[in-house]
Length: 367
Image 1 (spheres, helix red, strand yellow):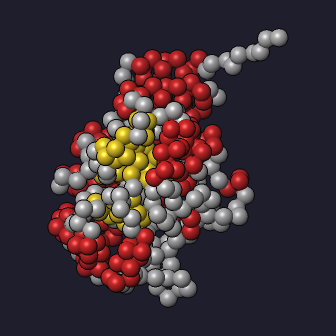
Image 2: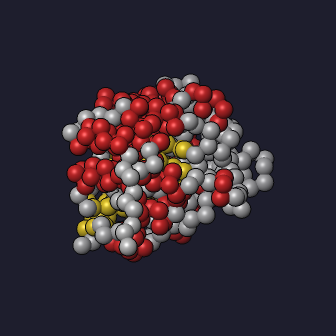
Image 3: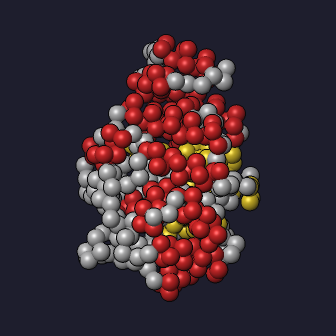
């Protein structure tokens, strides 16, 4: 008995040649990758690129998510986390509450605090500075990854100071890096519909440009799976790629699958496994100047995150301890993983787990 072989998409041949010659892919190449039925070849290409950049190593970090407040002036269409100031469930941690929250969850080995929250206009900018300085005082050896570019623009707006002044003050307080959030999709058509109250495309990019020029290495995300077109996803990738050409300040790109507003939402309201894997692979192929592509298990689940290590991903993020934002919007995944679980996932993919710090310095290799 013979079995028919899958017909390879011949439209991918010139793209594969460009990838193997180290030539940069265009928006049109990206569209061909998104429309091709041949996902396996796309995965193989992304895997080849990743192996050239990172070998068989897959990185993770022991970190903790902290969301000091969920009060937010912005009303993004996709957010289930935000609250109005007087709404049921609204909170803003005091300094004592912040220290109690962290102290009750902190374990030896945590190297990073990942801090994002609402754009809370009812507290002064000093609240955000104090959050960083307080944590740095009590946990001096933990990296502070805090405040998205959208939050930096918000701080600039409420204080009347430039984003550069804001970033310098935050760095003086103990800020070490910016997370990649607030990017959503970097086109104005999308932002006017989905996040009209937040930083524009140019403002998001400018916040990271300033941060890079001040010496910070930062992160970039893309929130896909709602109203954006495939072309807009690729425009987003090209815009962060162009900034990376200019500054070299991004460490990693993180595609984030959109979560529905309810955990009971139909599977038709969620991104498909095929789209998730394809988007990770295309990210790896388009972003030739990014060292790492991260698979965010919170949004795509642990098994797809494991599989993604053969689709171009070299990072499975971290332990988190307690993730709130995606789960408020309907994520079905675990809120955290242990170090042992991350090691198990990576080894199960026939990859070598590497514990890292925020800046991809290797802490321990688990052969």
